[in-house]
Amino acid sequence: MIATSRPIEASAEQVWTVLGDGWSYAGWVVGASRIRTVEESWPAEGSALAHSVGSWPVLLDDRTEVLTCRPGRLLRLLARTRPLGAALVEIEITERPGVGGCTVTIREDAVSGPALLVPAPVRQLALLARNRESLRRLDFLVRGRAAARH
Image (cartoon, rainbow, N blue to C red; front, side):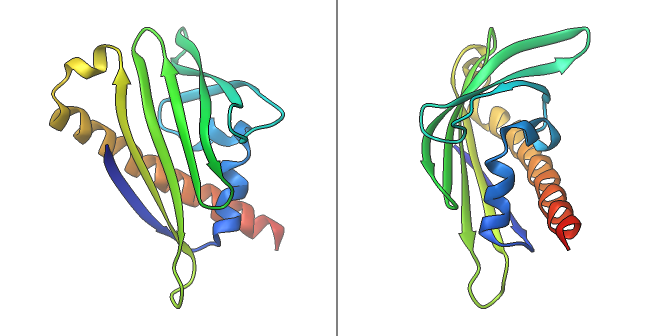
């Protein structure tokens, strides 16, 4: 899995608040165009959200399931987009003692489907670019929510 990290000038709790809001995923996950439903127990293990990928009129509907949830620290997801396959996604939050804020790391790779036919280095370069932008958007969303509360 390729890893991408970004320091965020917010607490791990503030980041987790956004990750725990399944309805926010289309606002920061590159490629997610809309969220159709979020199970009430999100982000508990076994819960899921239904999402769409693409642009109207060509949208693929599928779901993302939580495999592991360690509140405030780690979210491991199985993101499906049939017929394209599925990806394993890990989002880890690490506090930055003495510096303030936290670092958010996304690790991702395809685990099934046609994406596995793409050579790993090429696939991982695309994921690196996508997840850098996703982390940039997450950063904006976290800081924007924090500013709105003050």
